[in-house]
Length: 396
Image 1 (cartoon, rainbow, N blue to C red):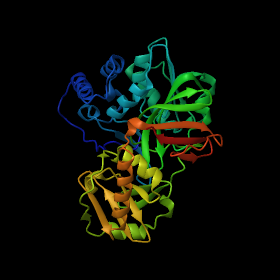
Image 2: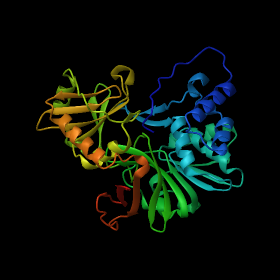
Image 3: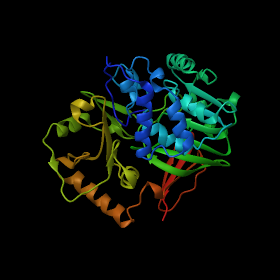
Image 4: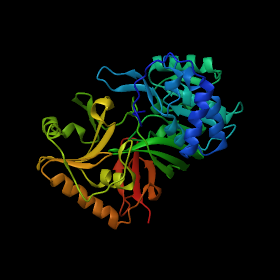
């Protein structure tokens, strides 16, 4: 996972009761209405997250935060324990039942697999796959320590699924993708559900997809934020280091002149008045975020591994290179650097979205077709990839 919130772990010497901390976390998730079903609630109350984070103090383990457990040399996280609130959203989307056979792409610490094992019960089966052998080994250790040694952990490229264990009733990915591997669809029973962090250019969305023959059709869409899938079907979108703990992502990140971008960010920004846009922990959110990402070629996504230094985790914006203009959507304001051109373009797109009826994620529809087979849809967007075609549109 990339992150909903970044946490820097500080060990505490104060004695605490992990059970009380865990139940308090679940109470907060219920109040936030991300935990909705009795099955998901019971699983979160039973599985001890701190056991899967042996180097983290329980008081930190039971915050609603992502906890990064491994880092790349360039400063990007490579493995983590996902934010429990995001986990809950995705597990509710997954709609697990006792006896289900589940495949997880991205083992992380093993915590999510244990929660799923609680829900499917002893008659079900959970298989989790991670491309990093050391991550898989640690997951095995954590699962055994927590009493879930019957969860199968494999060190392999999750993009190919797990054909030996197929078919699966449910598949969940905990890494962002732009291209849905056909192996996931083929290893899912007809009518089964795939939950995946799908990147529509700069927007990352947790999408619940139902298999209907050769097509996967969305039934629920939520905002999320995850690190990219690795391996043969790793995200095609580049991640470019800007230095100072800042990174640029998106399909056109390689083409952005970093000297221009850095020069603009060094300027004092000006507040853009009269423009109200939806934001969340992942930057620009909701239907407008999706519309901009799909309709506006100048959209950029900037994130940081040093949120305490920069004051944000992720910000979305619009860069107009010829006009030397950058408009960023922060949580506290919309601001512009350089000329006003980027802000004017953002305002024009926002007006278009309003005229469409301010479509939200509840009106967004997504279909995943075999590569080269998706039809053009009037008023929609078609993104063709090596393994799949992604069709999206706003319904109504």
